[in-house]
Image (cartoon, rainbow, N blue to C red; front, side, top):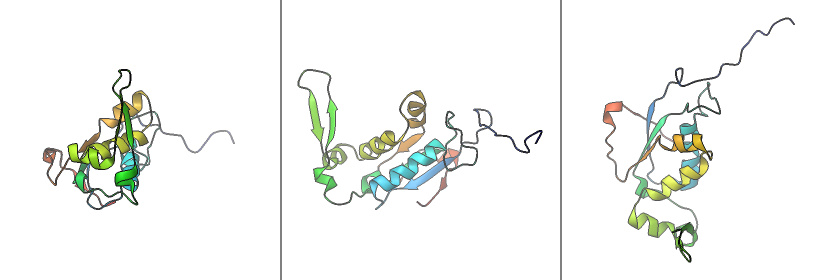
Length: 147
């Protein structure tokens, strides 16, 4: 065989086709929904997926406060953070986080499923989470998908 009959095509910032997608989180299980959202943001659902390029879509999540957690995770799961001061370790349950801000649980779950590093931080900016059914991105003409 003197030559290959195929070539590997890598996407770059000029050839990527980014779209806008709306996902309704009403009565969806948190982990299952967020893993699918992370795949869409990463671009793994596209044929021209390239691991080192932002080739995913922009995802708008609505009704984030209506997300479901299975079992006793709503009260038993613990999110840990640190203030940076001595003795500054703070703990919160999903119920407490959702009482303060209904978006935070979904944002944290998706962020944890994205790659760590510069690319992951860039991909995270493609996520838009809203409490309630309204969002300000109508000008981008997003398409609604059912997961």
